[in-house]
Structures are given as structure tokens and as C-alpha cells.
View (tube, rainbow, N blue to C red):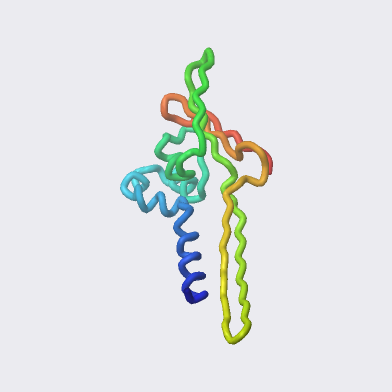
Length: 138
């Protein structure tokens, strides 16, 4: 395969791996347009706040990485946990030749592994509304 074609295909595949708030807003345009301006601004920035609905959180942050149900004397809450969304990216290209032949190779690697243990963000919901947002350090 031509190395340039391989590179183009690899980059296109990587571009489609992650959704952004803009992508999720486009998928939920009519709902998004009905939200107050201050909610829209936070969602565009990929942020959430106390009082947000589950739908607003999903548009701002995407689906949680895991969900924990917590039962206390105050009631039942759901904790939506999000890992650090940053990723690492690597690219390599090699060329070799001999006896009138040439060989090419390229590789692309991407990891979504967090750079610290645990979650980056907990969004705590009760009765479908955010009651707290807990962030961890970098």
C-alpha cells in the first residue's frame, strides 16, 4: 500500500474515534437550542454544573466511563465517573531497501489511558439532576 494512502486512512480513522461537545450538540441540535444561554455556553465548553439534567451532561461530556449507584440516608444518587480524556499519540515511518527492492511501513498508535490512577471527574445526580461535580487533581 502507498505510504501516503496508509497515513491518510490512519488519520481519518483517528479523527472519528472521539466525539466532541460540538459533535454531540449537532446530534441534539433542537434540544440544545431550547436550553438557556448559560447552559449552552457550558455545554459548548464541555463543562457541567449543578442543576444540569442527565441529557445536558451527556451532550457536554458524552457517556460516562462508569456509573456507580450510591444509597445514603438522603436517598439514591448516581455517580457518573469520567476518566481523563487526554490521549497520547505516536507515529512511526520506516523505509528499507536492498537488491533493487524497497519496503515501506508506517504505524499509528493512540492510547486513551489516563495519566493518573482513578477518575478525573465525578458527576453526582439525584432524581435526574446534577447535585455535585467533583474534580480530581491533574
